[in-house]
Image: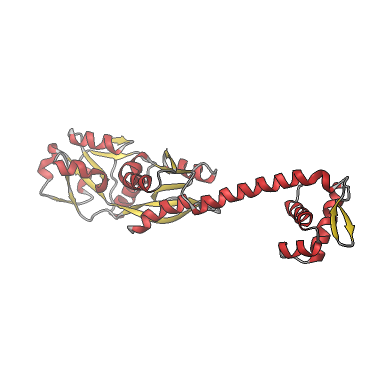
Length: 297
């Protein structure tokens, strides 16, 4: 295995022509420099220097033959380190953001537009999928930051850094159920109406199940749905009562095509969380995006 530190010592000694001056430049002891040279010579099987009274001189059959290649290699590595360091101090490169289509639409859209205006040189990749897939993308290095519906099952490969957006689940209905507009319903009353609910293995459905069980009822769907947009369309058309975050239904509540049922007690709030892969160095581009949420938090 190549030991880059040995080659850095070799290069520094060759440039300085002296063990003492090389030790000073490298901030290590002279014996450590001498030992590193001997170790590299042993590995390569050649003598790299002629030891002279006045200092160190590259040997014709060893050091002179490899010096130019070592110099180019170290310059290339320094360039790589410089570019990586620049990424940590300036917003460049690519930022890969993972979230569900709904979170992109209702939670992240404005932040992404704001970020684009601030850092137009950063390429943004939007990875739309369900939370488990986003977690897998982060763990395998294919996604820099994820936004998940909480609560999310613990995972050693990611860290939930913050809760950035609250969701308030409500029950909605259209004109077919206008007789309920002025009534206060209980969780038990909801059993008497056709319910349009998200699919069973979703965080939203799990939250509803916990709420129902805490009040001793079993709220079963007449129709299971896989998108909030489709749910709103069906509710507007009178197919039943939907359960949706208020934040995702504001457009329809605002134009009067849907209304919010008064149900007591209300469902507990839940949230969207910001998640990051564990043990990964954070670029300046990523830190700048995260700061947009802290700024308004």
